[in-house]
Image 1 (cartoon, one colour):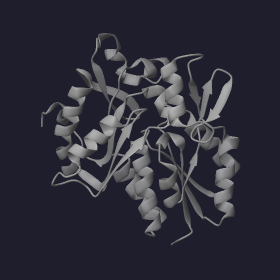
Image 2: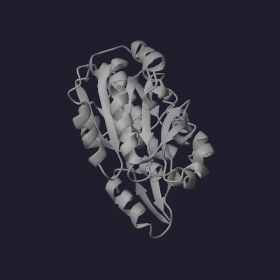
Image 3: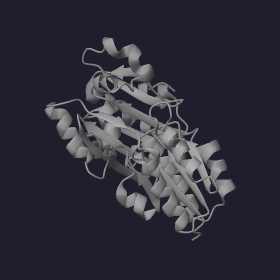
Image 4: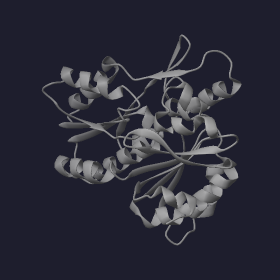
Length: 296
């Protein structure tokens, strides 16, 4: 395996630690604040602890913030000290987080090194999958040029996430509501269906509760599987994995099921904004949001 290229991302990618380790990906934690109390995502607080605090709804509303440049520097310095020639640092969409600002500041401090900075234009498992696929290609020995080509022309433009959330309240309070604002007041027991488009959270419809969401997911998935560019699909959950497990059971034996379907938790930083009970499916491939509503 070539020692030349190192992949670094941030904790909004929600890559499970064991996957990051296996693929030699370093993950920089974002910060989560409950009032004056500061935690590092996935390091000093777990997703389940965050969800528990949200559901108890005691004390201050949590906020999240990007790592400082000085928090990023040790990751870059270590990679170059370890003999990597190039670091490709792939991060959460700049439309939702200031993380890339910190990354750019850190880059100025390692000026003579080959640090490539990438805005993934997405977040959570669709970012995770971009990094996951990229790291697999690094392990296969692909060149830097080849990696950047596939990243910019295939992985990023085709990274998809479809999410059903219990409420938009968390996105609203966290200031990350983006274009989903337009349906905030019209829900009345409806569950919003969200995607990340052009780096923003965007609502493309709503469903009557999780049962309808679930059956829509089930009917959409065969089309998703027909349009995959990789063999990996991640099902995401926040606080409660029951629906994700149920969805997995429904789709694992379809004729066109990819060989790698995983159920992973949505991490604390993203979870603060999506809220408990959210359910997602993420993949790299084509998508038409009409598929979710049974239209081709």
